[in-house]
Each structure stands twice: as structure tokens, then as C-alpha cells.
Length: 298
Ligand SMILES: C[S@@+](CC[C@H](N)C(=O)[O-])C[C@H]1O[C@@H](n2cnc3c(N)ncnc32)[C@H](O)[C@@H]1O
Image 1 (cartoon, rainbow, N blue to C red):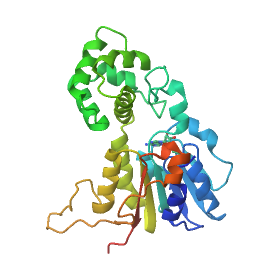
Image 2 (image 1 turned 45 degrees about the horizontal axis):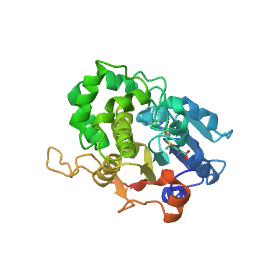
Image 3 (image 1 turned 180 degrees about the vertical axis):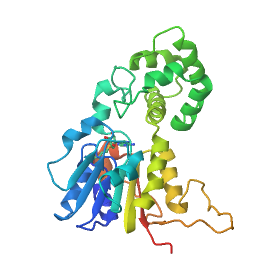
């Protein structure tokens, strides 16, 4: 069930004969609605780094599936001879399909290998992070990506335990860190798993790379809509839409001129799900939608 569907479609302000990009195809819920709003002249290019998503691609001549990371947005648009697009959507994070497939290792509910790769051909899994990262790096990851309150203690515990026991599966990992769990274990594990997932998939860097390319590939008047699920991502999107960089302030060039931001913020405050949506779709909890429009800065 796609999150904030109506809000995304309204926000993209779809031109029926335009070219659109869905960076996060997943189950294809948003894409199907975009297609409904396109005429036979329209085009939709969809990215998903998870090969499993391909099976959801509808038979429709207007759609092109790109089985790659959206950090290569501009490169693959060029490959498909597309210079400019009229709209871009990114609905970040993992899909329900990925989350509910035990063997993918994303969910604390199951026991399986600690995998967490969205792209199953990537080398690094969560096991590698747990097994090989130095203590200080683990500390920072849990602190910054999971906001785990005792991240230092957690990192120390992992490093001590990994030398004396196997930590390959979700249950082995949960048992290994159980003595340092603070507060509600379910919430604690969720924060720890979120941090690992962000690290394994390099989620903040890929988002930054995609945002940086978005203004260059959008037509003037074209829009970008991004749905985030945690504050780290939302902050990046908010700052980038506002300033055109990740500095949280206007950047000056060598001559003291303010660098021009080619994006105009459409949503001063993020759009969040209605009470109705929250009731029928728990996955929409904590989602935030921000939209910006490419403007001419000449
Ligand atoms: C939240 S789901 C998208 C759901 C989709 N909007 C729908 O309506 O079904 C996110 C999807 O994006 C993919 N994804 C996440 N980050 C990606 C990235 N950096 N590059 C390509 N695909 C990515 C995931 O594999 C997952 O299938």
C-alpha cells in the first residue's frame, strides 16, 4: 500500500506527456498511479536496486526498469537518452516485501542471517559490519544512525562478544547484546537495526548523491517529491531543498556571491499522513513528504 499516494500525485503536478522517474519502484504502487496520470506519450523510468522488484513491473511500453542504485540517476538517464525529466519521486527505505521476507534479515521479528542488503549483489552485509568494524566506528553508527542512547556501551559489548561467540544470525546478535539493552527491548532493537541498515546500504550518501543530481536533470517547472522515514533523511532533504547544498546555510562563491539554488521549496512544512491513512497503513507512521520545484535562476 503506497504511502501518501494522493499527496505525491498532487504534489508532482503531472504533465500527461512528460517523463517521470520513480527512484524506488518497490511494489510499484506509486508508479502505477503515475502511469494512470500519463498519456500514451508519457514515459516512466523506474529504479530499484533489488532485483526482486522487477517481477512487479507492469507490461507497459511507457515504462523502463533500471535495476540499479538511484545514486547513478543521471548516468542511467543518459544511457536511456533522457536529458531532462518532468518529475522525480523517491519513497525511501525498505519495502514491505523486503521487511517481511525473513531471509533478507531486515526484521527483528524473524531469525535469519543478519543480511540487510537491499541489493543482494553488494558485498557488505550487516554481519560484516558487526564482525569487522572497529569499536569507535560502531559507536558512531549506533549513535548517529540509530540514536541509541548507550551506543558506546553497545559497541564495546559487540566487540567483546564477537571474539568469543558467533554473531551471524539475528537471534545470535540479539542474545549477544541483550545484557546492554536499555528500555523497551523491541524499540531498542529497532533502533539498532535501523542503524545497521543505514550503514549497510549507505543510505544517507546515496540520498545526497541523488538529490545533487536531481536539479540538473529536472526541466524548469519539474518537481521532486521525497518521502522519508526518519529525521536524518528528512533533515538532508529539507536543507537541500532550501539551500541547494547540505551546509544548512547559503554558500558563497569566490567573489562573495550567494550560490544559486535551482530548487524552490513547495512544502514549507512536510506533509504527513492523515489520521485515516495512519489507521489503515501502519507503514505510513513517521513518513514525511517534501516537494521542491526546479526554477530558472538566470
Ligand atoms: C519503500 S519501498 C518503495 C515502495 C514503492 N513506492 C511502492 O509504492 O511500492 C523502497 C524501494 O526502493 C528500493 N531502494 C531503496 N534505496 C534504493 C536506492 N538507493 N537505489 C535503488 N533502489 C532503492 C528498495 O529496494 C525498495 O524496493
